Image (tube, rainbow, N blue to C red; front, side):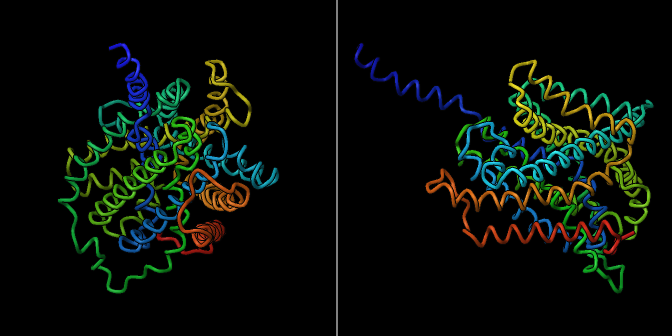
Length: 425
């Protein structure tokens, strides 16, 4: 009996360790929650010139390229210690100068997105409070929301995972309740733009690329996932695949509902009013004349902002901790939280309505660290490490495809910034 007991102990211990391994669902929720946030509300506004069919094609292309650039980060990251960030990996594989440049673009994007989500949360909370008969300014709403997110991120990555899973689940429920109602109002003639005898879509194709790229931004979370899961490439790969696929499906349904309900010309007025979340929700609510749909859209927007806010700030938090050498103690995490949240909160208090503008500025910098740098990392990693733990399929052609996608995005953003691309306004 004793021999049997001793012999069975390793197996029992192995099962216990396996049972305690973090769930793929939690990681997928972090990725999906980071992607599907307030940024999705800007998509139909910024892509209304291209309209539904063209927008869907660009979204699929952007999903494919950003997923594989994320996997390239994972491939390179697996050759380093868990917790090593872009700064460590890029400096070692590509060089100090590119590391500084890449780090500047990464911090810029994550700070811009954090500011954008504070701005968006203020807009959403103001709209929600107004529906409840209360009045609260965008500044105060964004400040309260930012402090709540900062508390969760300060606690731990596991806390972010648990809260994100809960909020993302509630968001999915609100999504299907909301869009179950909206799908019933989709009109084929509106979706296919049949009221326009001579539709002109192609001129607006190029300008949509940076917004789609920003809308699939999860890359700052790849080092965080490896810190959470350890060197387990298949589990992390599954997190990225499932999380990004969820985002692609939700984006498709969102575009279908909005572009099948609101005529193409109406998006010009929405854009002129700033294109913020509350403006779009108000336009949908007035078009459908449904208090229930307006309420569900408001709930969904609150969950969407919360999920994306948590994911983006977690990536920025871990990058800052690694770059500045802050440890994982409560005091060290407090330092990381202050550096993470203080600058964007300050900007949001000064400029509370900068959501669409901030999302647009993030596009060019995101092209560098979310697409171009991952491709360069994969190339350099394969030259240095003969037997990597994981390798993205497609070989050199896949690296070239991701690089070309990044360069096209950079060119599109520069042309858009200098008003050299047509805008549906």
